[in-house]
Amino acid sequence: MHEMSLMESVIEIVCDTARQNGATRVKSVRLDVGVLSHVEPAALMFCYEAVRHGTIADEATLEINRIAGEGWCLDCGKTVALEERFGACPDCGRHRVQMTAGDELKIRDMEVS
Amino acid sequence: MCTVCGCGTSSIEGHKHEEGRHRHSHDHHRDHDHHRHGDGGPDHHHAADCSDHYGKGIAGVNVPGMSQERIIQVERDILSKNDAYAEENRRYFERQGIFALNFVSSPGSGKTSLLVRTINDLKDRLTISVIEGDQQTSNDAARIRETGARAIQINTGKGCHLDAHMVGHAAEDLALEPGSALFIENVGNLVCPAAFDLGEAHKVVVLSVTEGEDKPLKYPNMFAAAELMILNKADLLPHLDFNVGLCIANALRVNPRLQTLTVSARTGEGIEAFYAWLEASAAHRAA
Image (cartoon, rainbow over all chains, first blue to last red; front, side, top):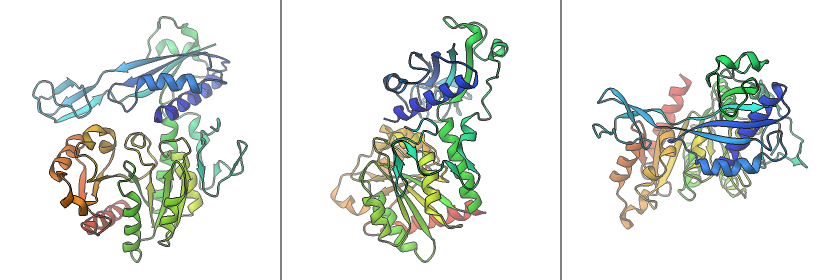
């Protein structure tokens, strides 16, 4: 359940950033989470509810943007969609695809007051 | 969890947290000021006055449901705090010429047995210290200490992985010898430790032949993050239907650069190849 540590980290970064910007409340937080990353959005949501209590973000909503998986197929020489980490190229069926997107795990922005 | 540094409910042997107040200082010796990094890494672009910054921001000028002047661009990796601690650890290890390995596996793959054998066999050639990670008990650190090696136990409590901050403290408490090796035995878990850089030179994933050949496909993140896979308990192969070739093929599908070794920590079969890898990698690192 490393989603708990990740969300503790999110709350920590969000609250620090809000304070550095002179804000007293955090109203919403947006994350970018790639579909090929090692986390489960439902678990992130669940943990978020648990860790935001008692912070200046305790009423902040959480939005998770899913980033689609993409890779560069060495054989086709182009960017292709990637359904799973180390999946095959949908065009040529070979596995020589280097992941270029879908591994994101990022706090994009937040709304404060 | 400590809201200042995020050091959590984990405990490190010899370190006491009293009612949430720390007896140990978080300002480390050796230029190891974690909090400096927490306040903004190189990719941290928020401005003191966000109102005139965000119109040019990556999110664009108009975000539905969000009032423009109060949006703060964060653009930071969720793991950025851990990664900053990991970089501190890595720099410290490099300065001291310490070769650090992060051993990851599911519980019961024989990590501790492998470490004990390695320490005993290499005693005269290499000083090895160990950081042991488990949710509870200091059994593993005690097993390591029986070899005469220095070891420290981190109990993560409810935590499912070691993080770079815990390892930074433990490494400091171990007072590592320059030019030695540090083996970090992570919590037995094939999922979570994959995400947390500890500052190691390499991750080594240990898989035993009593597990399935498809483990690399089921838990790809871990095998993708590792440089070396050690297939352990090879002495049991005559009693099992385990297909070594298929297992290695699966691992290479997930990580084409993965090096693989088949060993038995119990009988010593194949273990010399691991020692050769260890010494070559440490020498390469030092060069």
